[in-house]
Image (cartoon, rainbow, N blue to C red; front, side):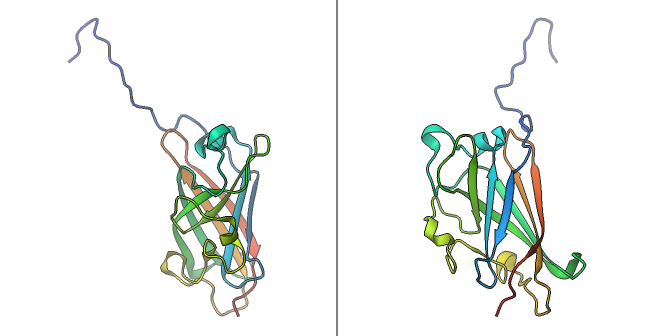
Length: 176
């Protein structure tokens, strides 16, 4: 019970105060490969710039950035509806791509959890690409003619609102 004149202070940061407004560009490319996908994001949102520590001395290409990144991938039918059993999700990690140009941040996503990933690992057959035949423990590539996918990325971090960005449909080459 509080008495008169007592002051309560809280030194902990209250989560969800900074609003993430989103990404300017969200792209998926299979790089003329089969199920290996490169996911690229670009943004000017000050909250994302701050969250990913892309500024000044912290602007180091290829380093993993802050935040918890969750990816959900679904294969779509010819009408762009999710195919039953062809959805997978899991944690991915964001890495700085190149350096900052003005106030624009660029990141690549991978399911490889490393402190840094060399840029050549996002080339075709690179180890940093997300393999849709194994991501989340489910092969969602299928054997039918559908090659459209939906990608949904959610970023969360203490002190920020959660944000989800959806990219669909994305036509990728069928595995050979």
